[in-house]
Structure formats: structure tokens, C-alpha cells
Length: 352
Image (cartoon, rainbow, N blue to C red; front, top):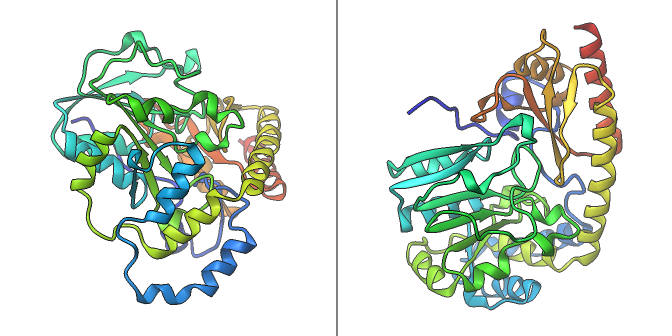
């Protein structure tokens, strides 16, 4: 096994411990609009629910998700975050050989390695815009596709084209799909309800800003859901995750406002970063930007360290497979915060 560090952004505990200061977190791709007033109100008013066991079947939330997508409840399985569900899929269905694009979310590799499976990496080439070429894939038990992809920010599968993909089981992680105004053109949710070859992962972490509650779900054929459900631990969805996820999913105004806000601020951040000599941002359909450092004197660790000193935390992408110490990732935040990042980048790049 060649070495890869399975690290993620958003580790504010480690940052505060090391640097003894608060920072603006651009390393975690969480909706900067945060929680609505209604959600905060419900959380305060229902705090006593913590005294009781949660509904083991999460009936109300599953009903809400089914209504949202116009699918059957039997097509849905909830999990303690989509990461738990990745490991669940791998442990239940197993795999002798898995296909994983690179770069992409590292938990696919980590989960597959936990069952001692062989892995073939499908290299996404920078000079080709990190596009996914299905013709380069070979037969495997599992194929993982992060769509849109993390950390590149682009759609690997467009317009629901999947016919040329190889793999007995295709796991499509749509953690960032909510940010697309036309997500219904690209989601595989409806295909997954009928096709036993497809499993779709969704999460409330990114778009709905609930990372601390750990809540995600699978959409798949009922037969697959039955197999997976047998391996689930009881009471894995806490009472507040059930309550708040249901509220967030029903808030159409929050969904509309988020998409408009992210589009506007992402375009602003991209257009300002591209003006900075030595930095190359890549187009994105998500709430984050992958940026290449073209200044030969600066590495991703150097830039990360300098920015933390200024109270700004970005994602050093050097530990993503198929990337090196010339890549960083920055989440889209508020205009005021985005300007702080841009000014700091300008200052650092101009002095180097």
C-alpha cells in the first residue's frame, strides 16, 4: 500500500490547540448561511427530547425525504452521516476489486482498504480539467463516484449518463449536488430506486449546515436497502438530527437563498483569485474552489501556515491522491470573509 494520509478539513479542535487562536474556516465546505431562526428555536424548545431514545426507524424524516424526492420510503436508509454509510456499503457487499477516481474524497479508499480489497485508481488529469473518462475504467465489484467531485468541484457524471461505467455496484456520492440549481438533471436518485447496480449517497452536512449532528441517507433499490438495514446499529440517528433535518429539507426559501448566495459568492471568489499572479482556480459547480499554486517558491503547507497566522484556515490538498503540494481548496463563505481571504492571498503572493 502506498502511503496516503486520511485527513480532512474542518478540524477546528486541532487548529485551536496548535495555534491558540480562532480562525475563519475555509477548509470545511459547509453552507455559510448556517442555521435558520426556526431551526434554532426548535432546538431550544425541544431540548428535553434528549431524555428519550430516538425513533429507531426515523419514520418522520424518512417520510419527509420520500416526499421531497417523490420516491417510496422503502428506497431510503438513514445513517450517522454519509461516511458511516460508505463503510456500511463496503462491509455488507464486500469487494475484491474497487475502482476509485483520483483525486477524490479519501474515505472511499479508507473504507475499501478496511476490508483488504484491491484498488485501481482512475487518474483525473489536471491538464484535461480533471474530467472522468468512463472508457478507462475496468470491471470491478465497486466503483465510487463523487459527483460533483471533492476536491475538484466539477461534475464527473453529467446528464445522468452511466451506461458506459463498469462495476457490479456503482456508488454515487452526491454530497454537493444540492448546490446545483439544476440538480434534478444530474442526480441519480430516481435511477437508483429501480436499478440494483446503483446506490446514491446524500448528506445534510454540506448544504444544510448540520455537520455536528451527523445525518445522511442512501437511496437505492428496496432489495439493497433491506440488506443494508440488517447491518445497521439501533438508534444510530439521534433525536435532534431527525428533527432538524426534517425542518431543513422542508425550507424551500432556505434552499433557494443558499443556491443564489453560493453562485454569487463563488463567482466573486473565482474572479478575484484568478487575478492573483501565481494562483490558478478551477471552475466549480459547488461551494468550494480548488486552486493550483503556480508560484514555484510557495507550497500548499507554506501558504496554509501563513494564512492561519492571519486567522484564515484553508485546506492543504497535498494529501489527496494524485495531487501534490501545489494545491489548496477554499470554501465559499460570506462576501466580507471572502474579501479577507483574497487580501491575505494577495499579500502573501506579492511578497514571495
